[in-house]
Length: 325
Image: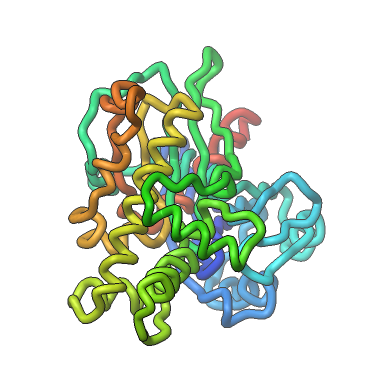
């Protein structure tokens, strides 16, 4: 395959990252990486035009990883007001080839491309190489995908696992669920395991303890937990990671992902210090009579912001290889 340039994007609920990927056989390199805040642009078209206006290249192939379901002609983002039609965007960008994939699908594809120092070991374990690998993590939402080994190679399956129902495991979590049910008819785990979810937990703790507390944004909650200025912020962050551990462990049980877990999303790398001190692993393992099923599952954390961009590039590289172009 001759060297190719690909417009790649990783578009979440808070940020959009764009880059030019250079593909040369099995070599993938990213350049011209720019990050934009979603709220600064009325539409994806405005953000793309801002990016393309800042670089000198205009590739005619592209692959976008998006925080949204991708099984419809119109892509509607779950946690922002952006939307676009696949065919219209391809036409406006004059792209000969264009793919739109779920962001966690791209992350799953990118895991194999990441250097060793892009993944931090959270929990040791030999894992089962014949079993699926789970990719999951909180950001603006809670993304999830898994990679299943097959006789024809690896198969990536993106899911909406972040929208499964929240299952409380302690009295405190039962009270949290009751609080959330006053706001929502159905409480998914994403209502708690996301940026907004951390705020929900913090607000619930304040209400349940009848504590006067300031209104805080997610980043302010983690800052207050870090410097010890708010007991409720500390409790909220602690509970967030405990619920995450239980949810990830449940996802391993339901998908059979004994090959390992890769944690991703924006929240964990930014709060790595708090995460590493949490009870995540204990809660991950707390599966009663099924503890042995998850005990040998390794858990790693993606600490590279470029993982989904690399995944999008890898997806296009594989297609071009198959086409012999």
